[in-house]
Amino acid sequence: MGKTTEQIHRNMAAVKSKNTRPEIIIRHYLWTHGFRYRLNVSRLPGHPDIVLKKYRTCIFVNGCFWHGHEGCDHFTIPKTNTAFWLAKITANKERDKEEQRQLAKMGWHCITVWECELKPKVRDKTLESLAFTINHIYLQDHSIHYRIPENEFDIAAEPDKR
Image (cartoon, rainbow, N blue to C red; front, side):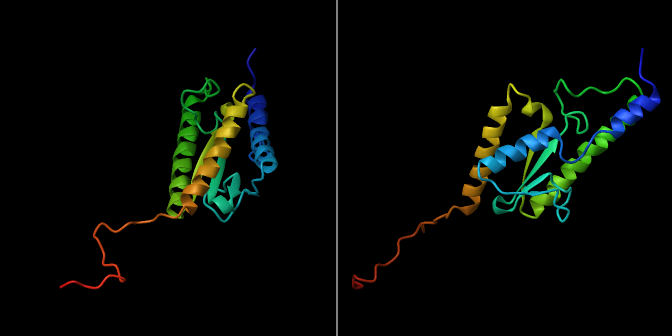
């Protein structure tokens, strides 16, 4: 027997947007590994879930269904009201792209972690990869780039022999 419209409405309305289980898993890992962050910073486009100011990095923790994770087993279009859901998920994906473009213009790095990447079988690999990526971003942004001139230059200690 299928669910009624009222039951579906109650289920969808109960879905949280903050402090979700996947978000808490990432926050716990980051905190225990020495990363300090802010949550849902309203001054940035898209209110990123996690903001690491020191690393100029924003982390978005996306649910596979709500953000249309292509190729994921957890993303299936509902069989009822399909047109509505397709439009909603497409709009979410477009909004996500635009927000990340705006953040990139402001000099922020964006990382998206999908809900399915935090399932127990792949969680450790995902979290280690996340820490590696954050550290890599930091090192790239803070490295000193030396430029060696291509032409030879005169050395002051030697006299000019002309």
